[in-house]
Every structure is written in C-alpha cells, then in structure tokens.
Image (cartoon, rainbow, N blue to C red; front, side, top):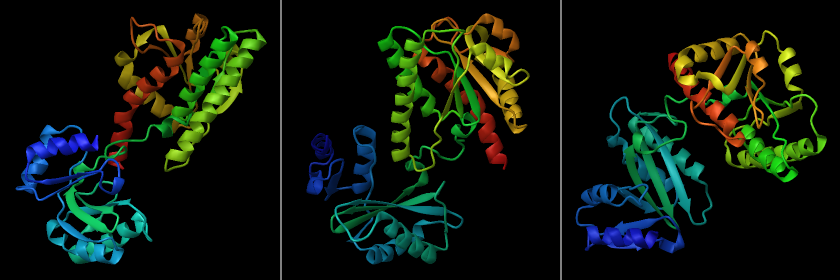
Length: 347
C-alpha cells in the first residue's frame, strides 16, 4: 500500500521526492521537496483516501528528547491565549528512550514557553512528534484531527453493563451446535463486560447438550477476556456465571426490575426515553436490573407478566440466538448513552 500511495502522491506533485516505507517501516510515506507543501497536504487529504493521516513537517531535529524539547519551544507562538495542547509521539526504530519520555520533555518545554495548559483528553492543538530512526519530525495540528475512541461527550457504557444481570436461555441442540453457540454467546457476554450471566434452562433439560453449551460458553468468555486484558488500557471485568432454572430466576427476583426481549414486545424506540429513565433510576437506587433473552424456544410468555418491559429490538425481524443478547444490549446502550453523557457534562 505504501508504494501505491507514493505513486498517487507523485502524480499530484511530480517534482517531489516520495519515499515509501523508509527504512522498511510499514505504513509510512515521507515526502520532501514539494513545490507547495501546504497545498500538497490538502490535495492528499482530498484525493488519496488510502492515506489515514497527513502531517506537514514544520521542524526537524535529531532524535534526542532534549533536542526535541528545544525544538518544541518554537511552537509556542502557535498556541493562542486560552488554548490547550497535548503531545503525541510515535517512535520507529531503536532508541534509549520511550515515547512517554519525549511527551514529558516536549510537553514541559512547550508549556514553559507558551504558558498554555496541558489537556490530554480534549486538547485544542496536538504537537505530533514522528521519530524515524535518528531523526524527529514535528508538526502541530488541531486537536480535532486526532480522533479518540473515547472523545469528549462520550460515556463508557461498560460501566452500566457491569451492573446488569443477564438471564440467557441455553441453546440445547446437537452437541457440536450447542458448543459453537456457547462460544459465540460467551464472547458476546464478555465483550460487553456484563456483571452477571445466569444460564437459565426451562425446566429439566438433557445434561449432555447443556454440558457442551457451557463448555463453549466458558471457552468463548476466556478467549475474549484474555484479548481484552492484553489490549485495553484499563481493568477488565470478567463476567460471573451462574446456572438457575428460568422460573426460579424470576421467582427469586420478584419486585426487582426485569426487562425481557422477545418479538411479542413493544418496539424499543417507542419507550426509549421512559426505559432509559427506568434503568438509570433503578441503578441509582442500588437495584439490580435483569435483562432476559431466549434461545430456540424463546422466553416463556407466562413470564411476561412479571416483566417491567417486554421489548422488540427490530419488529418484523427474527434475530438468531447468537445475536439476541448483543442486539438487546446495543439497543440499551443507544437509548442510555445520551442521558449518561448529559449527566457527565453537567457534572
């Protein structure tokens, strides 16, 4: 892809020197000698969708934290009064320092020179430091160009899901099918970091398919949990699993909030605001909110009488078992998020 991008850039400015994957570093293209660097940057953004980010290099120095910090001082004039900034460093090659070392040194120097405040969450400007072997290339871009998964105005919904109890009817088909369905549901539950999962068979069931379903469930959960633990920069909640007959599950929670997702229910969109207030109000009072989904047989209709809400995620569409829970939780996340984000902004 680097050579393809280099070819396109060469067509935009035939006089420029374009180096794809310098020193063998994938995902990077260096351009030098452009007739109009600013215009070329804009042309690349507008006409080369293969390029994810474009930085106009405004300063170059040796790849040394002290030299980079001194170079960063020169960007003080780019920060207007009241603006905040952050430093983002990417290293390519072997060095005796880390990206964090550079962030700290450059950030301290720029703060001292400009008097601006550092804001790592929502900065007005970002000083971008790209280190390639022995050289550092510095750019300053608007904070809006550096997209974050958890930017301002977003609330992490996993904090709500950790306080939910999910009751899921097991899939009890042929052993192989039960195992595969178990792995999918296990990963699904762990993706959302649900607080507790109750596997809720309907009355007496055959033990063998239940065994294979549970085996797959735990394998799927463990696989996803390990992946989350390696890649998330925060603590990950491991969903706790219990087994209880579906009728006893409801009986033991009489009077507690219960939401059932089945096609016979009302469209979620029709009660969205009311449902969001109901869930958040219950959680604020320290109550456990249970969410129930079925499998092959579906949730027994007699239990509808004990539910606060019976909801349909997509009227007219029969959602397969492996997507039932994720569809329900995504629907809840959608209706809850604006209220959660609004409360966060008010705080």
